[in-house]
Length: 99
Image (cartoon, rainbow, N blue to C red; front, side, top):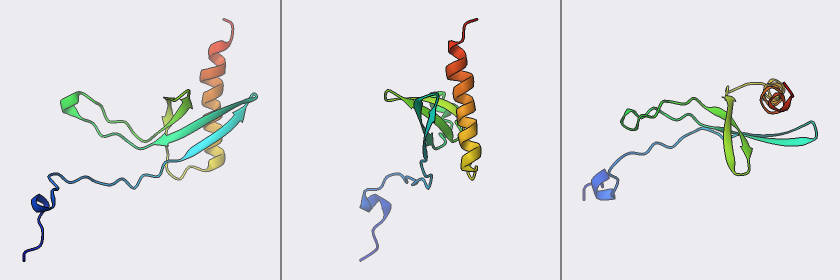
């Protein structure tokens, strides 16, 4: 009996499994907890008009994610935390300062 082919096995297209490892950081700043999650890159899709997006850190808030900065593999945790908190200071708290 011949070995099963993709068609016989019911596999009509190959799906690649990602090796990307999601990371999370919970940082407390000015008495508030900020939850950041990394997400893998999204390839471009010309048919749908979607541009490629690199791996990114996102701020999670009320079930929604807000892009923060690129996720650099191998970045030291102290440097990462400092960069994420700098973003919080410049984006979240600076937006609430009186003009």
